[in-house]
Amino acid sequence: MNTEKKIRLLIATGVFPPDIGGPATITKFLLDRLPEAGVEVDLVTYTDDAGRSDPASGTEAGIHRIDRRRNIIFRYWQCLRLIWKLAKQADIIYAFDLLSVGLPCAIVKTFKRDIKLAVRLGGDHQWEQAVENGTFFGTLDRYYIDRKFGSWERLVFHLSNFVLSRCDLIIFNAEIIRDTYVSHRQVERARTDIIKNIEPAIPSVPARKAEKDHLNILYAGRLVAFKNLFALIDAFILTEKKDWSKKLFLDMVGEGPAQPAIAAKIEKSGLTERIRLLPKLSHVDTLAKIAASDAIAMVSLTEVNSNVVIEALALGRPVILSKESEEYHIGNKDRLIYYADPLDIADIAEKMETALRDGLTGSLLERIGTEGMKENDVSWGDDEVVDKHLKAFKSLLKLN
Image (cartoon, rainbow, N blue to C red; front, side, top):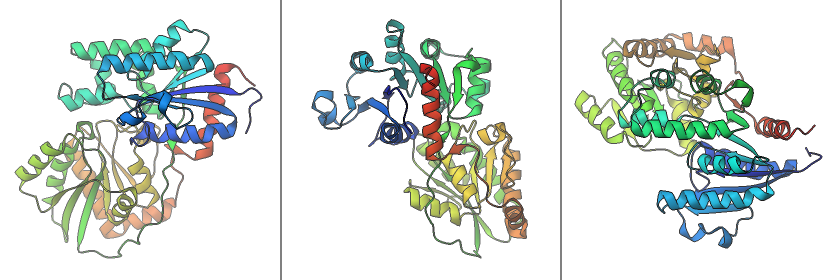
């Protein structure tokens, strides 16, 4: 697909391969795919590799790296200078966060008003950090309703609002976060668009055993506070106390800053043989673990978009999912999803028990047979992601 006028795009991202994470995945995808559609792409990112931190000495065409190990003032200043320079050859700057690259991009936009600025948001870092630091415990929506910010949060809030005010287009990967920003951060809906995540690849995995002598619930993901893992453990403890014909296990797979606290809670529970904290697995091994599990639990305080949920549904596994999620927000009625209130431990336990008993009685097979395999509503195929970006860029530049 070619455009009559070549679009010149400058991508700015805080993470890029070999870093991992959503922004790293999609920026690499766009860097590879957009030139095939006639878009010229440069990319600015941070790196931990000092040998590749100098853009002039890099061997990767169009990729400009900044050493993130330097102090924050130097990093931001170098990022600002680099974006200022590269913006001279760009029609659109496309930033993938609000501060580490978004702030320098917004400053450039302030002085170069002829260039268009777009930003993509796949989560809310300020809310996540507030939950992680223990200054707030609740949903993303409630965080911005209450606005009980400390001094640092107020500064971050105002700086990110400055960036949002300079954007010609704000792209979200989910309706739930767009609606939060429109309702509580004075973002005009007319300046927004939805471009969902790339649909995760699901290779073949070993066949699930027809019969097991136990039942296991799986959490796979980052071990961070907003994932609400203490509530998940408490709900499992309630569920495990019920009368079961088989032993119950909760497997928690991943790594992150909450790991020591989670390990301590498991030890205190007295169920160290039933609640297993396991190291992060490869993608293929995670898929095999999902396929072998009796239920997947994702009861985050707010779950914007989870590949694990998409993969579990594609593999026909039931999911106990937070009502504060994109699937619930857009009205996904997939019968393999058991929605639970993330702030109600008893409700999580009830949905956990229902999902497991449906599996034991055969009701789960009826659900799968009735629904069949459906396309998910929260991610898109590669071509659709490319086409939506092209459409958004053309609209910004008023190209037909």
